Length: 330
Image (cartoon, rainbow, N blue to C red; front, side):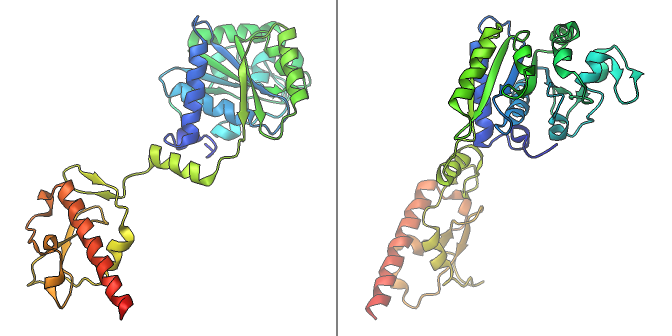
């Protein structure tokens, strides 16, 4: 399975959260509970239609629903590459019931064309061999029968269609599915082309769920902030479940450079820039200059409260500032 299936590879990422939001919006639109077949199409190639279809199918499967993803782009299907399964037999072979290359009769059982993926509850029907008449296969009664049978064995069928501006395959499919989503790309999709696709789908009686805008640029800073919120671990972890994010690591590091632990010395300072609290003693000639909190003997670092730790860190920082001022005067 390729890395582009980010909803499965990195479910805590902000992009995965966006796909879950899209899934939720679709579910709220399905108030009648009758939507079981969803077509994903676009205006032109390169807008991310197959990527959207793959990750959306994963997010539905993650809720425990049985999902079948159909690659209906029989001219240039790539879902088998994304999920790492066999390219054939697929949809074209199922609809024609003939292995096009060898002219050999194939099974009439739909389950023989459905392949398992690495994602639990997600199954795939690849595009199959490239047929000479893909549009005719999609408009045939076999395609309608296929969708009706799949509805009985799964919760939702997601279809990865073709770009509507190039061929009419997806326009044909929009008539027999419950709803359609059009994928567009930021600064790439032309407004006139999108208007034509929407008009064509409505003219044939298709139902439009909405339009997804893909490839919107996001600043690195905003992405990192979102990634921290959803997936990053706290920097400092104190035992007994207490967590603290240290914002003064640079100043603490400066103090640690002066530290030389001695076996016969009493531990007096907490070092809080690692996962476990440590205790060390600074090598300073005049100990009278040290803050009172630094002179307290700590027998067990686990007994230190979070407030006490922050208070000690604050006093350490004050001491460091005073030391810097003295050095600057010299």
